[in-house]
Length: 354
Image (cartoon, rainbow, N blue to C red; front, side, top):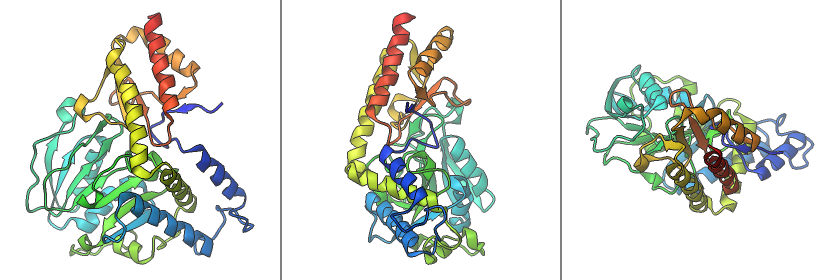
């Protein structure tokens, strides 16, 4: 039986994507080759790469606006340093909202001055800082839109003329935004788009080429753009599954369509967290993430009973991160509302028998 998969990543993917991908592993569209053994220079795979990049720009509303989409390797963690390598000449501003922002700040400091404009570290990152200002003389401003570990999400961007760089690994393609406000977006595919191994980068070309340092070829966005994400052998299968997921998203009505479903899932779960005396939300209410709901028990004596209930209900992946404890329910795009209802029913049963 398929489990209700609330895993924070690698993420749940649509069933139709699994079915198409599994067929392609055996024989890609009748060409007599598996997608796993096909040359990345072949006509068939080049079409996959171009389709994946085009769909990414289409969903973000950035086609024809001077942006390029890249599928790279190394995860978002490599982007922590790649961003700074390509954009940081003198000084950059960073918003510190958790573990991944901290890691990005650490890497950026290798390349220039980093100004931490605000942080929620003193509250174990359970909220998004507000009312901060971005210095006018920075090369870029970096933020993390959604914090998987702590269950917070940025709801608004600061007013700045600097290019905005955003790690969207855990909420990419989940909600409508004016994506043209960003100079660069990056996201590991494994949180909301595909399997581990591919990283999507969407960059406005006119922000590149302004640093004086020599950039190693593998870390140079301009080289990857010039080679159509084929400077080296790309993570072909991960790109293909990401393409299938982006096609599935289009069938759901795009970002607008999936956002409505995501909001319904989040409302159902957060309402139960707030209603049920056994549970308390971790993140500040105004900053709660629809993608990752973090919550704790109000009485640890019921932990064993609750854990047994959700395991018996075929639920997977809701144990909280060690930084927060408790529970974390990741409700990525492909998670159906019915799975959230199963979790809510379990929470109600735990209350009933307590």
